[in-house]
Image (cartoon, rainbow, N blue to C red):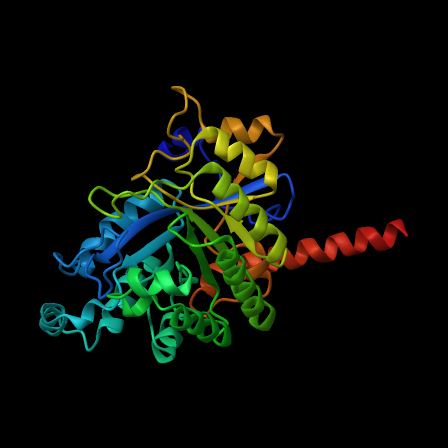
Length: 360
């Protein structure tokens, strides 16, 4: 399969295993296909390439892509949009024309279409109210809420036109998702101007939410890459900065939270990050990104080679990792997929218990 070739590994012979994900020598990843509803966004962040010259994706146009993705081993449908596009008149008019009662109805429909084709939907659309989150937890495995933030004085300037980026509001979203037992991916961008003490504050905030609800699935440390014409004069995240953030996250966050980093890093970064203790590569897009081939690497060199060199091995996972499946943190609808795996996990646990008792 194409996926196996790009990963630098043999084509997958079977579906996702789930068992073995928590082995310290295993590096996991979720293979995903992106579906962007729209680039319209109520926020105007100075580093973001999302803009207001866009409209909504036609719902049924997403089915073909979902079918194709599933055929090459993709299990995550990453549903993404700018925040609250329904603020704009043209979007509300289009939703009405298509017969949707609300933007939420539209989002739910597209996610469900992907689920019917075998994908597990994850959501990254910015602010949703508690009522909206309660609806989306029925069909989505993960709600992604990034806390991209900088120290208060700079935030007043950077996010002056971005009402949805207020840290207090984003943290509320983490709490709302937690109360609904909605697994949540969060994190922040490293190197946009935040101080190290601010990073520490954010990580402690995330840790506190997880201690209350057990709902934080993963924390993404996103390296800042300047876009043409945006954030003039601001350079990209340095390796030292990223490694500092990784080490701080691994120290502060509870051990059952995965710390992930994007693969758009150079090979030396990847090796250092794995040596620091990261064991999850998060969401990897297929086929829009050259999977596991890192910028600056020699021809034919894959991240899989670096992982193998360190005595580790790759394993694809669902967007929902083993521990969350084990704890049943998914809806009845998603149980059509996950219940069988939850049974396998419990069976494995019982067998291990019997082995321990027999040996004692």
